[in-house]
Image (cartoon, rainbow, N blue to C red):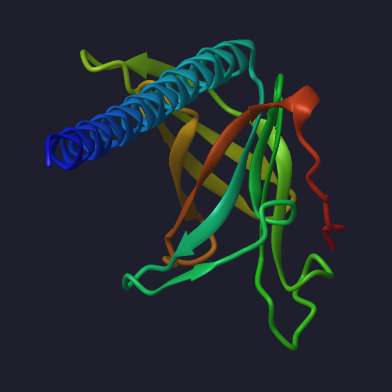
Length: 192
């Protein structure tokens, strides 16, 4: 009888130890996953801060491209677009503003939209208290021109741009990322 009780106690102690070890292992895995998530968030934050610094430097050097992935029309309707054909490019004293829609018509630029190539007027760049950068300039092309207002969000290279053309009142807004000109891969349509 004593042997049975001793055997039952050993089984109970063994089961308790196994449960404790399993619970401890589960807690270790949770802590490990949390540490991995925290490290990933810290890495993403560093990458966004570096992208912001590169974007600010590119704006100050006047050599950048805002590659848009979404367009918003005058009355609030929006559509997703490809970033390599929808952009605002500034290279020193020259600029290009191109929008291209996926439609059945080729448009004036041959890819379904409009391209304004031209000289840049005065460029005004300001930074607000929160670190958001605003860049405003005019692009004067052959027969058409546009007023461009870019707003770069603090601690990321996400930006929005408002384009006011002089030939109509169809104001457009583009949302995308500001990228240094040397890193961009935009397609420039031909202007007629």
